Length: 73
Image 1 (cartoon, one colour):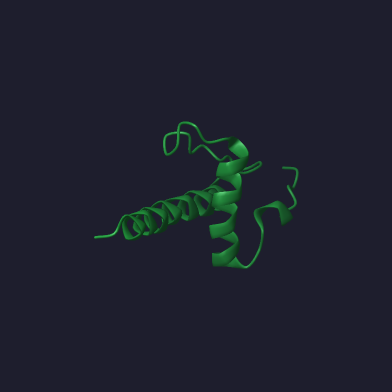
Image 2 (image 1 turned 135 degrees about the vertical axis):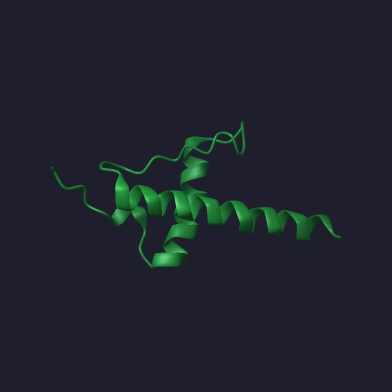
């Protein structure tokens, strides 16, 4: 098995996790999205996590999470 195949599999698996997490937040949690993925890459930055997770969300729902307007409760 090639290293690139393994990395692609990891990206797909963990990308699915991020998509699930953002979708869950969208449905159940008031306020802005939280990108708490430090456990996945301890040296990653909040901005890197956001870009990575937003890409999967945008591909799935054809809308960027930054386009949502927060409503007051």
